[in-house]
Amino acid sequence: ILLIDDFGCATVSTWRDEVTPLFDNNPPTPPVIETVTVDTAAQRAVICWFPSPEGDVQGYRVLNVLEEEIALTNDPSITSAMDMVSNIVINSQGYLVVARDTCGGNETSADDGVPHYTLNLDLEFFKCDQSTRVEWNAYENWEGGVEGYVIYGGINGTALQAIDTVPGDVTSYLHTGVPLEVDFAYVVKALSVNGYKPSLSPRTAVFTAYPEVPEFTYLSNVDVLGASAIEVKALIDPAAESTSYRFERLDRFGDSFEVLATLDQSMADADDQLSYIDFDVRPADRNYEYRVSVVDSCGNIPSVSDTCTNVRARISVDNAEQENYISWNPYVNWNGEVLNYRVYQVIDGQVGPLLGVVPPNIFYYVDRVDSLQDYLRDGSYCYLVEAVEGVNVYGQSQISRSNVICGTLDPLMFIPNAITPNGDGLNDFFAPVAGYFDRVDGYSMRIYDRWGQLVYETDDYYRPWKAEDANGYVQEGVYVYHIRFSTGDGQLYERYGNISVLIPESE
Image (cartoon, rainbow, N blue to C red; front, side):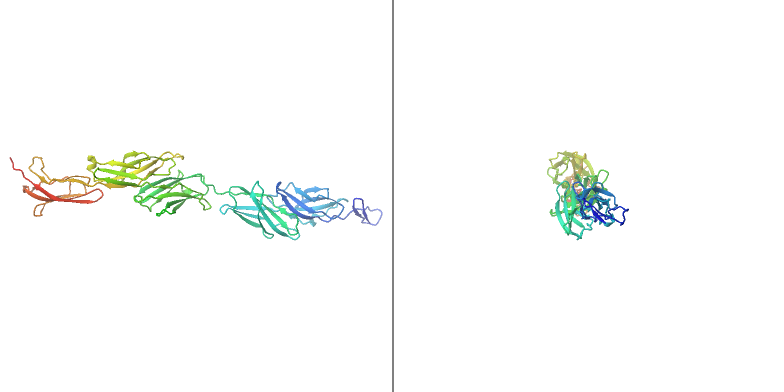
């Protein structure tokens, strides 16, 4: 027996007797899910379905795939619900919908439903390529399948813009040219072939972090260590992330910088200084310009230090005035500016006494070498210039030394042309009076008679010829001298001439 009441409830009896009551044993047709999407403002799943066709449907229950109730409606006209419980940002969530009728609470079986799942995004940002790989799970169980996916993106907190569309069988996308140091959000929208409501993923963001640029890279010093060595030092930021530093030198044509070495920040000393010694140099002949480029962990160069040049000293010798004129180029690009320049004398390869302190705007120094002490030297003078930095913002003060520069005065030699050896203490012997030459290793004197016979020789400047032989004084006459001597730089000089020997008569 089939009975339909005023509410459309259809009741069918199971027995044809008058004892057993009539009841409804026909559950509604299982609802078909149209789409499972996400309200990206609330970040909650929204389940939409087509209503069951029966007129006695009382309402619907929304279940997750574990058959836990998510939402309940007693209004059959309501065909959507929001999941207020599940975290659909972390994982994809699946849903089922069952229908209940008005007669005895018959309900469709969850086993008869086909679950639909939310889209879930997996983002991976590649800092060095400035790109993001967006991956998602395929939207399944749409009748007709997926036509395609639209990828949206933008800085989090702003309206997202469509970036690209991919076919329905593609579930990943590489987004290039992503702006750095922002929260960049993505949403993927699935489009059905049959024109069902689209399915949106949660709004998912990734911070596009880029290696932190050092707050500073300070080329603290360019220091000449020797005739073929220059040390370059850089003060680095110890908090920098995975950074290396490229020491560079301007090429000999002045066109571009060439890489000398790349040092990792872990090689810095206790004072956070990196240093490199350039051995391919001649600092006495030319200036070398250096800089340090920061290389981040992606191999890019986010910053470059100032350039600095070695101090190159030069010398000009004024023989007439007996002065050495020392000049040099200014040291530039110190943070603490140049406090002063100090000029030292170098003796036997060692830095000797400080000769003078020069203001930072003066680039020369004059050393007078006309004292008796200077006169007795070998004529060679060596100097070193030291640039001194004032205290910089890092609390340090650096020193940059120049090359050692040497100059030699021409020797002075006064040679008498006659002697009167008689023991009266006046003009009794023959010896040159000389200055600015090597008295130890660079002197010899030979005396010859008129027939070219050697009558005297010595390599000791302090042993004059007394015009004597084994028999007493030599004969009066004209003799020939040959004097050889050298200066401190090894240059050899020779003097030839006549010396008259006059023997005064004894009174």
